Image (tube, rainbow, N blue to C red):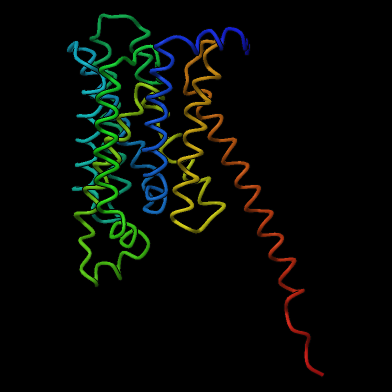
Length: 288
């Protein structure tokens, strides 16, 4: 299954190198956003956004325009709807469920009208690295730069509002506006992953590496760095491992992400056990 000679030959191909560059950019963006997504409990929202990214990509495929543009339009629309309609926490899950089901149903309908190859339809769902070209890279890099610059500008108040929203609101932090902006950033990042990981499994890069990182550190900065490293390992490793067997990249991306998560869970568990053992030894001896 893993032919290292064939893998080496394929790594020399321009389309594979382009895909690796796209995956590296996606890993950076996903890792930077991931800890905030987990902190703000937006994992389900990422999945809902991905479904409208799928709808937009399916529409673009039907119209004969770039899939990346359709995915971007669909995901940004989803993000705006989630930010505007899901302002109250009690409404958020139901709004996401409504948008998710609508997006998936409409996307399936659009794909049924597409007369082209079945592989193009399947690629939207699970990723297809051969479809990434120079135009895709330009759009991806430009969108990634915008996301990272905006995130850098709002990071401190956004982190404050994410960790303690009530105190942040009392101090005048515009939590609702920040939520909408962040939702749009997540939507753009989700759209970037459609062609690489596919709309069904993009959550593996947007959430799993961050969830793993936050198992082993409580520091937001360390969690972000680790999330980037984990996301890069999953994205790049997934592409390399998928080359020889010729299977969708998403299968290996999700497997690597899940393995990293399990390892971090074990590390956190062992640290917790060690802390419980050390606590009685450090306790002062009873008087008398």
